[in-house]
Image (cartoon, rainbow, N blue to C red; front, side, top):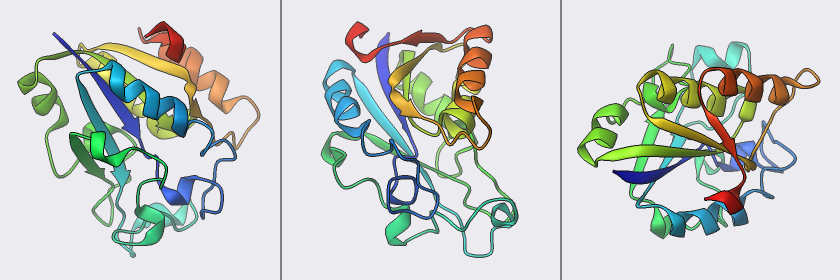
Amino acid sequence: MKKALLIVDLQNDFCPGGSLAIKEGNDIVPIINDLMDKVDLVITTQDWHPQDSTHFESWPVHCVANTEGAKLNLILNEHKIDQIVLKGTGPDDHGYSAFDATNISLPGYLKEQNVGSLYIVGLATDYCVRASALDACKLGFHTFVVTDAIAAVDLKVDDGKKALDEMYKAGCLLVKSDEI
């Protein structure tokens, strides 16, 4: 069975200077770039919202399809990415989980590629990383959350920590990048 790296939403709007910036967004990129060489397959998600998305009723406008904010972080090694997964593409599609992708069946793709272990990194711990990891566990993938390669929005104090606890209780393994 293969090991895959799932990079969640490492996009300009979630990094410093973006409309929904996470302070540590750029800090995790070098770790993620290093992890790409330790796995068999690299997949990244992209929030890809239409301008009229109802998602923006509860969040600032971010990652609008085909904008600078929706592009992947400039220091991410894009040439090592095997598959891009788009989510949140419909006006009523919030697209928190990578498994809600609209351009591909992610579970089908992972099974087709013979992936058994999924290492999840990216942004944000308390939203899309959490949703993707919980779905991966439910679908039977051996799921690892790489704790030094994620960062949280933390709208409320400790949201990121609470999300990690929830993922752990659901069966996700919490690891550091040097353990892979």
